[in-house]
Length: 130
Image 1 (cartoon, rainbow, N blue to C red):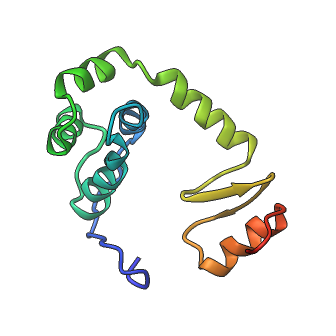
Image 2 (spheres, helix red, strand yellow):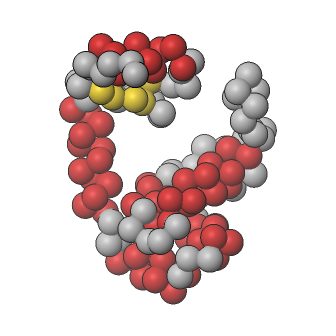
């Protein structure tokens, strides 16, 4: 993290991220919702917050200007449970055990990788340089 200049705090706990994943799946359907990924990273890895807590998640949503009321319904009703179940099943199929994981044409690499490694991955998958 330090090598890449990414912020990282001293975490003392590991929290269940399942609800955060469901919330992020919902946010991806909202205008400007993709910003939730960076906000959840900040909350968990930098600020050490419990992203398994509904209150923490709703605070993140509020900071981003997304609908807190809609997010609360999404979390209470687990509206994106099936989407996350599907994503997990696909991860198991690809034998993904960590994040980030990059997959191209059935090949993959896990963890933060240098540009050259990602370039080799996409070339092996059939991409050509311009």
